[in-house]
Image 1 (tube, rainbow, N blue to C red):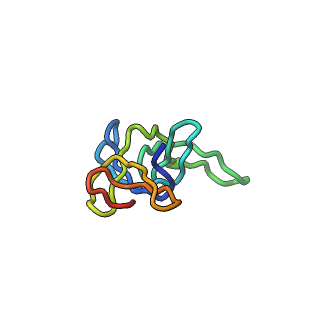
Image 2 (cartoon, rainbow, N blue to C red; image 1 turned 90 degrees about the vertical axis):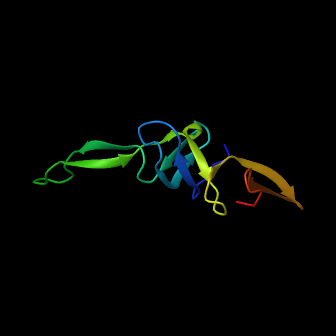
Length: 101
């Protein structure tokens, strides 16, 4: 998986197609990512204390990383990420404008 926490991504398919957001968590074992403000579901929360009311909370659920594309910070376009070695480091780069991400 070439998307990591903190990346800016655009959703390419599904109910939230076209939305952009920042990755808040990545789960490489399952191939999913959580994006702030995208794939939001409403959940009923029980009251925590005596006399408090229950409420409806909006929660961002993880979605498959294959449904999103990385947005290049340089060219501002959705792109695929490639890897190359510069010296002894492995860096990601934009496949469209060839700049480092």
